[in-house]
Every structure is written in C-alpha cells, then in structure tokens.
Length: 131
Image (cartoon, rainbow, N blue to C red; front, top):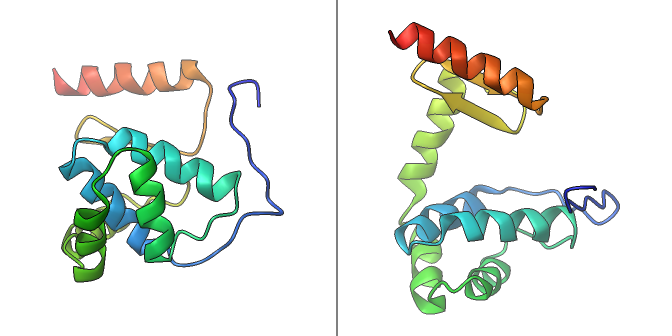
C-alpha cells in the first residue's frame, strides 16, 4: 500500500489469463509492454476487470496507447499464442510456483516477493557464477 499498490480481493475475478498474456506480447510488439503490464495488474487486482474477455483487453490496451484494431486482430487470431506457450514451457522448466518470478542471469531465479537485500544477494551469486 505504501508503494501505491492496491489489491481488492473482493473484486478480483478469476479466469483464464492466456489472452492477457498474449496482449502483453502484442504490447511489446507495439513498444508498450511495461505500460500494459502495469495497466493489467491494476485492472485485475484493484478494479476487478475480467482479463479473459477480448473486448475488455482491447479497451485496456487503448488506454495505454496501443492501436485498438491491431490489438483486436492479434488477440482474435491468436498471433501470440505460440509465444505464450513458450513462456509456459519456460515457467515449467524453471519450476515457477509463485509470482513475482525474476530470472537473474541464465541460472538463478527468485520466486515470490522478497526484501531488496535478498535480490542483491542473488544478483551477486549470479555475477560470481558467470566469472
């Protein structure tokens, strides 16, 4: 809360987020990945928006400056489905079980939220392993 993160569990709507992940790939293609991820998080955790509906996703995408027709076409065609499948495969490989998950270097992963000192320790281990 001190960082401005709002989570309203009473409003969170559970569902399949695959299309939202496809949208993140489309946002990356349009140069707005970071903004899109932030908007999706707020929509899901604070606003109770349904991230499995294309109309909802197109509206959110337009809010961050993505081209609505291009975005709708990408989502309806499944243009980024293979990229999402690759992401899922990688998450299985890295045994990701909690979010956030950060891949640090080629071999180290941090699952879940931690204090900054812990991340600094893992970064140092990763750098030492690379030498």
